[in-house]
Image (cartoon, rainbow, N blue to C red; front, top):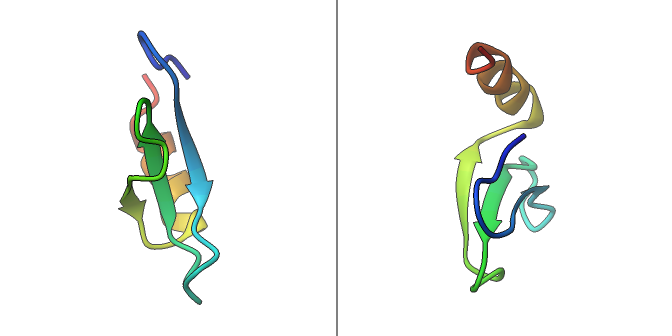
Length: 51
């Protein structure tokens, strides 16, 4: 995956029972945004956006 310029990441949020997928980027790596409610939903989203 291209992150253009800078650094970013996807991670599994283990602080919840659902295991939501979150995304963070520099310079504030601790501030993340939820991108999906589950890993399965994340994979479906990735496959639908792969061109």
